[in-house]
Image (cartoon, rainbow, N blue to C red; front, side):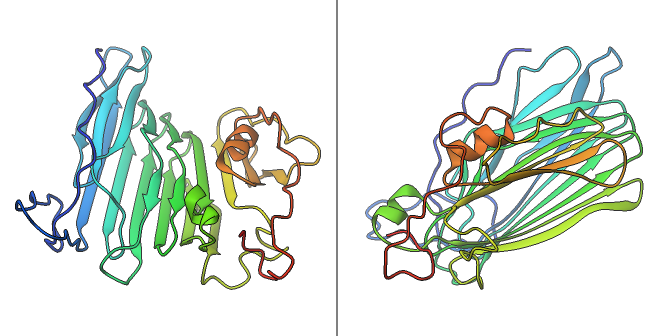
Length: 301
């Protein structure tokens, strides 16, 4: 299948509350105000009857543009493209992917998801629901979620696996952008929960609260000097290799003979990706303490 044409550049949003399709700003507008929006995108993958995977439902919404790209003979590949700045404060985004029995789906993204402050002082919410049927497979590998200074994102992911389902799920979280740190501003806040159930039984249920405003997030028992965290969950697939000695990472066995979780902390997104992909390379050891002498909270200056 021919790859889809590139998506248009991300567009600004006008102050139309609770809409997934913003309007174009009027000319000569002195300032563009943004308001919260709601958008829900959906992907359904199903066997095509010829040994491959079809996408009977591929419906983007608001900032979540979906494009089918070239996959292999058995699988379908969908890329999530940000079509506008999102999530902003007060936004309500959702993405539901369903892999029907016998189908194989890979989902990636074109760029990182950057949480930004908005006109609405409340947190943004992003709900992800992933359902994988019997003898189906999902490979979920989006780019990192980045919490920019002044933002608060509540990220909720629920994964439901049937018996015999296969999963590779990668999650990466980065606190602050580079220029946030160079300006001496604290990172945004990222509150996330991941719940995984297989055949009706809970396989994993964890919650983290990181970033400015979260209690103890930069203490030695949580992130310490690190500013990136991530995990690689595999179910019914080969386990990743153990992390290298000296890395702030651990490979854990989950209930069942074929479920593992690789959890890692890193000073930045590049080192984190190397740890999760099994190719640590330079800089994968313990992070240097970047705190200034008078900063007891661990914030970079």
